[in-house]
Length: 375
Image (cartoon, rainbow, N blue to C red; front, side, top):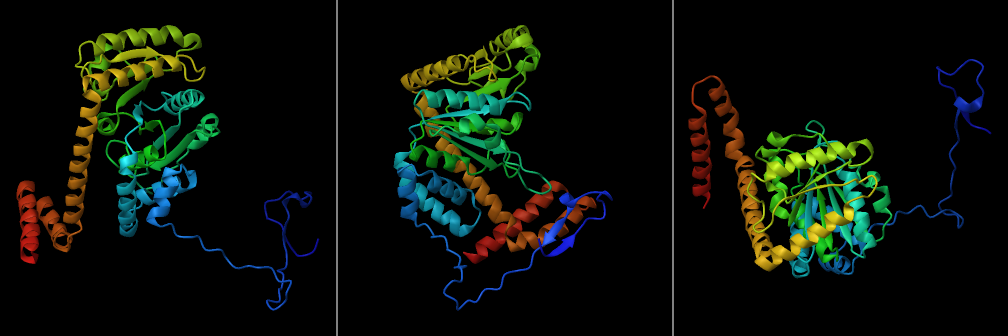
């Protein structure tokens, strides 16, 4: 073997060639030769709005993934294209069962979703998993490792797993998750499973976009007083105690009893439905069928009493309100007058020269003054 030989300084003295790197000489190619390899790059074809729509409706996974990437983009051009696509696929959406799944770290959310998704696929249903990964507050990056953790489910042809960064969104649900749900529904998925980031008071955001909310806990995760806490427990349609296997079965049943007493003192999250508390084992796939049976009962009941459609309609209006607030906030902070004035106002507040309330009044006054002068 020819070429320059490099050996790192830290290799053992009597070592062989296992630590050796060979730097090979490059190959000179005559571009005019008929035998020269074709090194030209193939440009990717830019999809049109109709290409996206046709691909989604024909259940093309590659096009669906590209469409979701388009939806998640913050580029103004991409946003406009995504809205055109969503407008055209809107009549084909809304036919799935949307299930939000949350729980504290270590409760086995990903394992539970894989077990439930795998079971549903074996029942002939198409399942889309939208796994929201937490974004770093420093680097803004996300690991997006849920797909690797759901190895069994990822091999199912009727399953689609899409990890997305939370991008710091309050509630643990990515800002564009609602639109991603519409795309998956238009692509023919029967069940949409949305895994949220952790658990907490802000986690109730997921309630505004799903039909059924499943809270996953583990044995010994709380007593009756813990269950009464305002927040995620009171908006749950089912509390499922995971890891009810082996020596944990007794603890799981005790936790179940504690939460059954707790939810009995809370108002039901859904009209006509009593919050259920179940035990199951995601690892051993035990109790998964019972959970799905109860979810089906929930859907049948709420469709019958009108709560299902009423919730869907209120969610759409909440969606509009949330987007309006987000747009107003964006326009305010991106305004040149605010970006110029706010640093000085901040200094005055910190010095105690003006109160926070007066600071807000000044900023809003300047913003509307500029807005009125430009209209």
